[in-house]
Length: 174
Length: 160
Image (cartoon, rainbow over the protein chains, first blue to last red):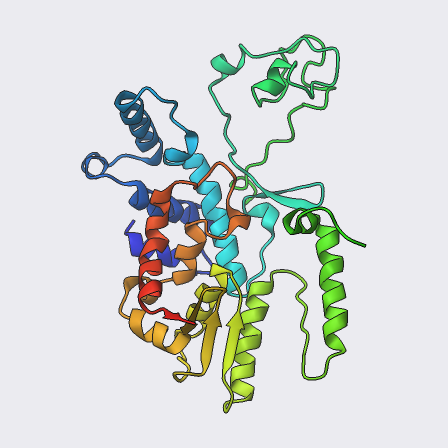
């Protein structure tokens, strides 16, 4: 999709979520694109991986997440939020919970991602044996900023305060 | 009563913010010559619409929108794309700068972002913090999109 065509999608009130997501990815790709990426026609995920390896080869410092392009998944959700904002400015009120926000404690919070943070075989190695509520750094899951899962010794990811909230994917409700 | 916390801290509580807005509204309504409008949700649209309505109702006067929000100037530019006001009629003023919307629109009207959607670019740049998740989009490269706009804004700037 052409960059300016993608920009125009956001003002169309009839755009589908699939179109919006594609347009959002096109815009973000253009922003982060290097000449090498352009030649190889990389997707956002591949660009993220390429940028990560470039950076980690260049210097022995920790590569921060915000210096990398977003993942496709995060970019899709960001595109939905951008669409929601543009439509709101144009006077078209949409339901924020269907466009990348979740309602928590009466506040709309942006949904960072809808996929898992890592593949299952990596996540399976992180579990806790807490007797408490799993809400301090002594809980392995809490410390790794992950939710408790079925492998956890006592809470089994069901009874503690760190249990996984319901997974939402705004792309599935249409 | 004297508060010993910062303004940001005080206003970060939505109840505090609402009661502060209500208090200011109450005090201002009493003063003659001031008209108070309060928004139910997003205020930016209402601010810009109020300014444009005022401009249409009193063609002899000039209107200044005061605010420090980039959203406001982007919305002003968008709303005035079709009907550009006469020079010296509509101003946007921040703490540091002031722009004449007519001159600004004129100086950037040939730019591709004006021919397409300035709103879309602004929303996608994540400038509006409400649609930006914390760890996402802190990179300066992302500002490239809106950077093009900012360059033109700064060229058209008039110091106060």
